Structures are given as structure tokens and as C-alpha cells.
Length: 378
Image 1 (tube, one colour):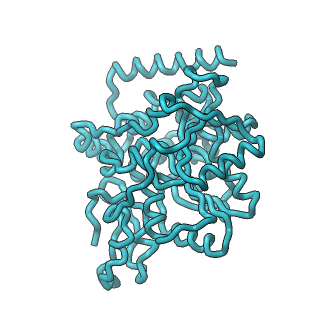
Image 2 (cartoon, helix red, strand yellow):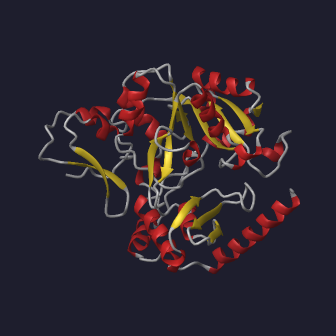
Image 3 (cartoon, helix red, strand yellow):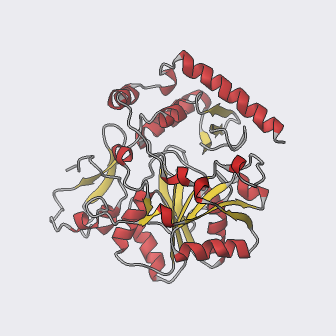
């Protein structure tokens, strides 16, 4: 028995809380993750419904009440390893130094899907960088709770929806839990991403790494970089790469993303993102990445204060005018989204999708501008 799409965010809270293990997460006909209930073992206890963040969403903390910083790691390698200024890596290092554990999203070994895991099972670098695809959570919330119950410090980083799901599952606050969400454009279907990787594999062989925020052309240029066991490298900007193009055109996003309930509030301690107002501030613009860090709770304030005290980063508190773009945003649903999604799902090779002349020209200009900007900032 499948649950209808509706507002479901596939956070996995229902999977983790089910006493009968009757719920699994599977892809639907469009490639989105959806919970599926085994009617043969379900006892209709209703615990899954009670734990669903969509059914009873907490109000959250208004973003307007947060304290915001432009933050970037002093270490160049730390910045390069992240999508922005390396804020997540710095927070993770601090938690690990305390004997804690970090949870986040990692690519599978074959690069064909993204799943939630922890530094108990993978190295921290695998959890870094933005991954523009919905992640498979499975029963990860049970592992978060198990670590918390032992008294270990835990950093959990996920979408705002996943933070909501985790909080509903835990049912109480933990002093040893630090949560981070991020500025989210929406999550593309896992099935569409898998098709994209399969298409690339047919061209270049086995992929060994995927980076949707490569800094090959500088931090400000959205660029997809995929490396392969053959030594070949695929490198395309947001207008040239079909997957990034679909992502930014909003045609492959989850239904709930178009009516996101976390545009102006957060349930996390810290929100991470890109700081795009560098030119308006007294901040050195190296085109290597600067993080926008929104702090919503005392736990978040303590964590950022510790980074500053350690002298691992530069942090500049921001006036409200510099960060309102972060919470004054909305991902609109295109009028022809459903038709476009159907076309994409049916298309076996995403690289054969038609591209307008205007988009091709924009892609060329974007690429040239990115190269020039990187050269000028050296």
C-alpha cells in the first residue's frame, strides 16, 4: 500500500518509528522516494501518522529572529572541500574532536544514489558538498537516537524537512544534538538523478566522484564535475549540463517543494548557505566561497562562538539587509512542470532532451564569464 504524494517529504520518520517494520521507502513511477506500507504486517496502530511532520508541523523559529554571519574557513583546503566557505566542515571537525559523530548525505559507491549516513561508517569528506538530489534516509533516525542516548555529541545535517522528521521522531530535546539545515532550492527525483549517472556511465565508464558545486570555474559558477575510473572528466556549467538545467528550471523537484513550509522558519540550530552579498560588504572576495550562517538557537550560538574562539575561521556579523534574500525566497512550480516531468521520465537519455537556442547562448555566455572572472580574481 503506497501513501499518496501530497505533502510527503520522504523524511523517513515513519520508517524509523514503525514498531512492526512495515514501512519501507521506495521510488514511485516518477522516481521520487515514497513510503510504502506492507498491509500484511501493519497493525494500524497510527504511530507513523503521529510521527509524520506533515501531519503536525511545529511552528519553528522565525528566520527574522536569527543572527547571521558571513563565515569562511581560514584554511584554503577546508574552503575548497565545501560548497561555500567550509562552515559545515568546521562544525563537523569540532564535533568529531569531542568524540562525537556527524550525520549527513553521501553518494553510494557507484554514485547512483545519495543516502543518509554518518562518520561512523564513512569519512567526513563524503558528507561535504551540496548534493542536488533527494537522499534516502531509511532508518537513519534510529541511529541518530542511539548515538544521542550514549551521550555522544551529534551533528545532524539535512534538509529542513528531514530536521522536522528527526525532531518528531525523537519527541524530546537533547543537549548533545546540534542540527543544521541549509538554504534549499528543492530536491530532484532520485530516479532522474540515477538516469543521469547511467547516461554518463554509458559515455565515459564507471563514475568515481560527483560534484554539483565544483569550483573549477570559481565558486560563483554553478558547475557539475564528474570523474571516471578511466581518468576522463565531465565538466559542464548549469546551462550546459542537462541535470543542473532541469534542477534550476524546477521541473524535477518534489511536489512538496513548491509549497515549502520552511521558507521563513527553521527547526534547526543553524542554517547554512551561500553568502551572495560579498560585493556589498567589507569582505575579501576571493571567489573561493563564503558561507552564510544563520544561528537560531543558543546551541547554534555556542557552536559558532567555539569556531571563532578556535580561530579556524573569519566571521562577520551581517545587517538584516544583507541576508533577507535567504528567507525571502520561493521555488515556483512551472505551469508545464507535470508535462515536462513526464517527458523527462520517459526520455531514456537525458542528454538528448531538446535545448532552446536561447539557453545554448546563455550557457556559452555563462561559461565565458565564469572563466574570465576566475582569471581576473587570481
